[in-house]
Image (cartoon, rainbow, N blue to C red; front, side, top):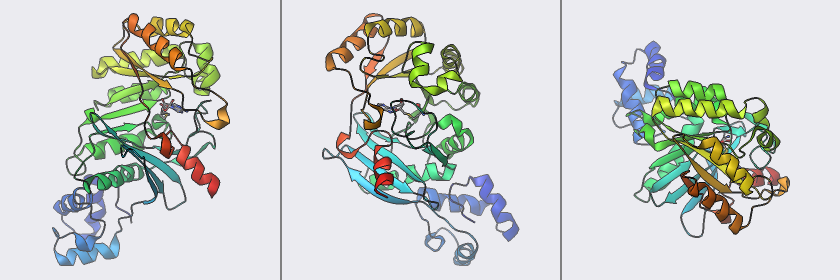
Length: 345
Ligand code: SAH
């Protein structure tokens, strides 16, 4: 039985039939998660006999890193993982001015079908388990530890729709938070969703003070439906209502992500609609100049249009930022490395 990704409670349940006292679970978790030991024989905090017994009955299997690419400027690193069934996912490390930020994937592929996104081109293969998502973070943590650094923030903005894999994602967040596992504060996490309304409402009640980002990308129902098929299932007005509810419940500012696509949603007309939509909310807007994906045929607007759009929002008192691009030389944008690998295979 693979114990990687288990909580203390789960491990205790596993150990009970072997008559191993429950305090050992805590020690095993400490060795596994804090000391990064994946071999029971190296768990020097356990008696020798127990180490041998555990080696015979349990396993610790963490997915392997298939590829690691570092950007020329040393600020970005991209990790490609392969799991035992051949599922491949990518994660990214970004050295930001405010610390080391990691971006993890939550699904192998995605079935949201957004017109601009590379991750959805081949559909969804499967959900990642909590342990698999955790393994992404651990591999990056080990990479950083070698350089005397650590993870400061974590965003769930990689491949997949996290709220379509709710249990595993929340399980992952809890593991990252637990003192025995990773000990990261919930405030260091951001979850990004394409607007799965029931998931947002549930997350608001979960009691985890994480930040929420909503992939808005259009200020009207009509336009949003054109680029995001999920908009037909969850109406824009409901998404906004859910975001407000989240902000009220958690007291945390919601971020609306807005990809700027040339001639599609980047005109002042849309900026005006966007201002009307988000004014008065505890929210800010993050403009993302499109990272062109060849298959989509969509283009990035000119620098002038991006600036004009951003300036219009600022002028109307909407807190706005423009996403800074990192790691373009290593295909760091959503799903690009994974797709390149799949095509090569
Ligand atoms: N499914 C979730 C999380 C994954 S998408 C969501 O929709 O939020 C993560 C972010 O990357 C989203 O804001 C998404 O819209 C953005 N993104 C996807 N493709 C992109 C592209 N080609 N250029 C720029 N941003 C992109």
